[in-house]
Image (cartoon, rainbow over all chains, first blue to last red; front, side, top):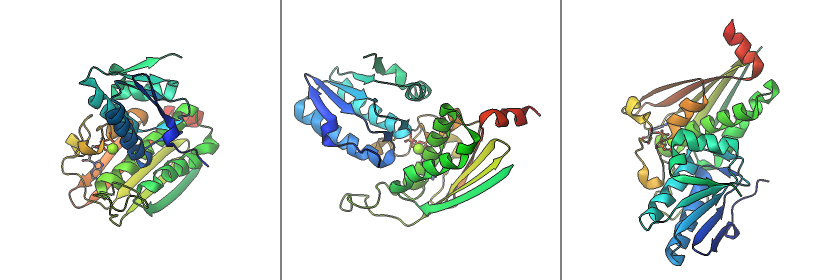
Length: 108
Length: 162
Ligand SMILES: Nc1ncnc2c1ncn2[C@@H]1O[C@H](COP(=O)(O)OP(=O)(O)OP(=O)(O)O)[C@@H](O)[C@H]1O
Ligand SMILES: [Mg+2]
């Protein structure tokens, strides 16, 4: 059974919201991620978001929507979007979509 | 060697992962590279998701979200038809949903009619980038058919040279 994302995958550390993304990111699971991320962004007034792709083996354009949407919400307050554990395939998707221009990929 | 398969399933988001995994399983015996496999799964996911959320406007899946606005399910089926011919995969994803008025505009990167749903307008751009060929046939009220072609493994490339 594929592991699903739960509330434990959203963590606030200092002024960062860390989101541990699921194994597969598609439209079916995107709503849960967006809704919970936005709730925490509002509640905790977090400035930055870090997307952790460690578990992620699949992503389609729904992932672009998740990242772009959060970027729009925090950028006006000077927030930034980061990505960690980005493998070759996810990097390709970042490049094709132009997301590499707004997301900073960090080596950890 | 020629091999063919056809799948018909309900147009709900619960079936998105099923659809791409089924197509992936259909081609595994060709020993595709990890990259080819990922490309095909992403392209199938894009076409199937479009059929579900744009064609039939089923924004959420079965179960759970019944009470939210837009949560009702519109009945409809998505059809996937694959033909594997000497290492070349032909995929056809079709729906009988509302169709596309202006296909050329729809295929432009970043164009979306559903920005409020966190869509980015990158679906067709991904299909184009990750597959060797992409063709879209659609009209208002006529549904949509997306045809994609990809060479797989060494066989695909050798046959293509001939
Ligand atoms: N099967 C379909 N039926 C009806 N309209 C469609 C269909 N597929 C695509 N479209 C139209 O084409 C537009 C562009 O599709 P595309 O997949 O590129 O972007 P998107 O689905 O809006 O966003 P994303 O795929 O990045 O989440 C859609 O917004 C929609 O208006
Ligand atoms: Mg799409």
